[in-house]
Amino acid sequence: MAETSEGAGKIVTAAILVIGDEILSGRTKDKNIGYIAEYLTNIGIDLREVRVVADVEHDIVTAINALRARYDHVFTTGGIGPTHDDITADSVAKAFAVPIDVDPRAVALLLERIPKDQLNEARLRMARIPEGATLIENSVSKAPGFSIGNVHVMAGVPSIMQAMLDALAPRLETGRKVHSRSVAAGLKEGDIAAPLGAIQAEYPDVAIGSYPTFDPVTGFTTTLVLRSRDEARLAAAEAAVSAMLAALKIRLASD
Amino acid sequence: MAETSEGAGKIVTAAILVIGDEILSGRTKDKNIGYIAEYLTNIGIDLREVRVVADVEHDIVTAINALRARYDHVFTTGGIGPTHDDITADSVAKAFAVPIDVDPRAVALLLERIPKDQLNEARLRMARIPEGATLIENSVSKAPGFSIGNVHVMAGVPSIMQAMLDALAPRLETGRKVHSRSVAAGLKEGDIAAPLGAIQAEYPDVAIGSYPTFDPVTGFTTTLVLRSRDEARLAAAEAAVSAMLAALKIRLASD
Image 1: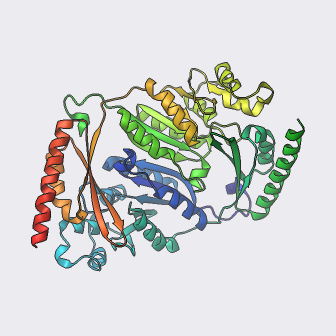
Image 2: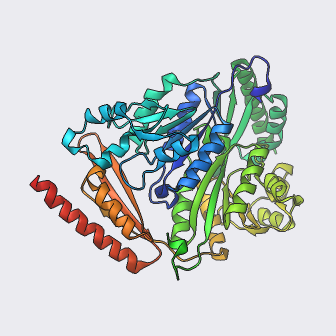
Image 3: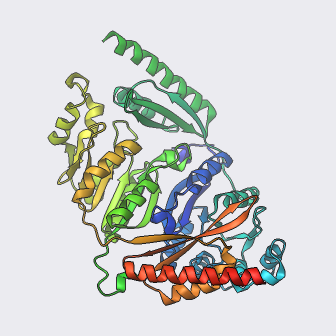
């Protein structure tokens, strides 16, 4: 695909690691994966993998180390609050084998929101930052996330995570953006598949996805999504798909 | 936790593997993870990990083999339609190193819905089933999923995946169910954290999660979720939490 095309520009890859028992039990329905995925696509970062793991140190450390070795960026959500089940910061420090302690910069941020007499030991846990990390500010609740190496540690509460992503994004290395076009096919996947496969073979630098939706009354229909870093190739592939669909509709109508 | 308690009953674990570029690009927001997570909890299967990977054979094979070695069940969604980007069945066959071909049982199911003259080569791809697999019927669109070893391959379209899960569930080995109780704390996490940690230490066989929610107007509040296979211990821990919250509210009000 685009990675191997000449002049395709730098490819910057990423993974998301969602940390939290509540997602795995089904009690909380994750809203962060889809948000971050769309955000990264829009700023030119290719999301390649997502993992969800429990609030278990070994699982978090293993996932962090697997993902940070494999991708340019790793974004984590969840587990940075003040309670006993918030073990993300300590787990990340362990993954990087660096010390972790209460960070005066983070304490200063907490004091912007929390009165000094309420800054108890539990709340100070939110200021535990691994050595060498850069803080990620958040305009919503002040308690910061942090970046260490290529790992960006964010909150699990969606509004706070989103504020952190806005603070973080300008600092991220990004790549050449993937552009996309959606085509409502108006036909079933099984009727389109053969000629669509032929177009995909002709345009290896345009990723063509075919997505069925099912309605109990009207049955199946299909949305085609074309994605490429090269806008000219994308336009050419879209034209080929549109011509194919038009011809196919005439043929099916005359059958 | 419960795994090491005497008489805790068998623990059955699982992972979900979501397969699809459209989830990673953010174009489609996944609705299957939360549904399956809740479903598994309700039938006594512990979801331990979720991964999302692209429509790339190497990535699918690697994830399947990692997860099936580690968990009792692996549930996949996506990539079993008729188009060129539907490569899940072939990837699963590769992961298990077994042949794959058009399966007459699957063809018979397709013919219940698709007229014979429309059962073209593309649609027959939906009948490609790895050798040795058991079909998973679906009442919605007829095209089957399949189970091979401990891997259960399902559709990505939510209504179809849900029908497959209903067909599959009675055949699954399940374990002793985890029960849960939710307690609306009415306090901020930072005020609860210390006494809550003490209760968690006293009840290592009850997993206590603390989940903040944030409202721009009213600020933070907290929901506590207690989970255990042992209902008596769960009730005792819940009573301890409720007593702690009541005492804390009195103390905070008098401060």
